[in-house]
Amino acid sequence: MKAFSILLLLAFSAFCVDRCAAQAQDQPPSTPVRDSNDNPKLDSEIVDALNKRYGAHQGFRSNHAKGIVVEGSFMPTPQAAALSKSPLFDGAELPVTVRFSDASGLPHLHDGATLASPYGMSIKFHLPNGVDSDIVANSLKFFTVATPEDFRDLQLAAATSPPGGPKSEQFEAFLKSHPSVEKANATLGTPDSYAHEQYNGIDAFVFVSDAGQRQAFRYIIAPGKIVHLSKDEAANRSPDYLIDELPQRLAKGPVKFHTKPRIRLNNGQTIAKSLISGP
Ligand code: HEM
Image (cartoon, rainbow, N blue to C red; front, side, top):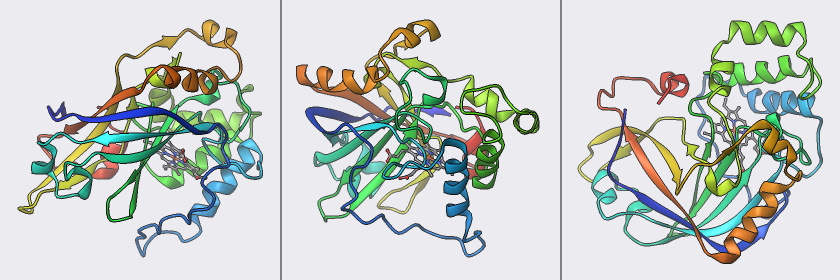
């Protein structure tokens, strides 16, 4: 996999919409695309498992509960339109709403806590036709497990130990039988700012050009620089240091990220496989 030369610029303006997690409840969620073979109860089983692990916190997301929302813009380079006919790449600057978040269902955890990783960045692109398009990225270089069922079972196994506390035998057994969890977690760092982290798209997507040419890719959202703290440095910061720092930074000027598609030259790989293979 190599980083493609096309860069898509994301810049976030000084406008900070909301510092808490219970935002955007006035908009209905988009309709998920379902496979008829999917377990229809899996969504609720995953949310129940997250609630079992972290407790249910009314008005907050079951995962990535703590976060901050900002407004910005997305500017595709002219070359992007050759790869994809998506209205995302029409050439116009698009308004975006972005949410940076800590992992876990704990809405009041310390921003530097181990459970706060992976850090999240979700982007809502406001397309000219009035439709919104969403993507999520996080700071894992590759994902912990390969399937939603394993994600549910990981939460259930972790729920047998107190959050951040010593691991139960059941949790240890799950980690032993799923070595990708600890390998993926070893790729994580604790940033000194949400603006100083790289966010990875993880899943594979397909560009479809006007001519019908298909090209599999994954993407990274790269900051100007990555700055990670040691565990001690992070512990000495205030509990909300990431949430507090971003508005102060944005008051001085926009924060820019480059979205870089990564194209697999041999695209015979499956999406499920790329979910857990390293970049
Ligand atoms: C088995 C796979 C996964 C499952 C089951 C899962 C589950 C969830 C759930 C239940 C939420 C809370 C959603 C809400 O209440 O609005 C969430 C949030 C989130 N997830 Fe995942 N996730 C998975 C994979 C991923 C991957 C691969 C990424 C990134 C590459 C990711 C990034 C995020 C982010 C950034 C949020 C916060 C969204 C926001 O800011 O509104 N997740 N996830």
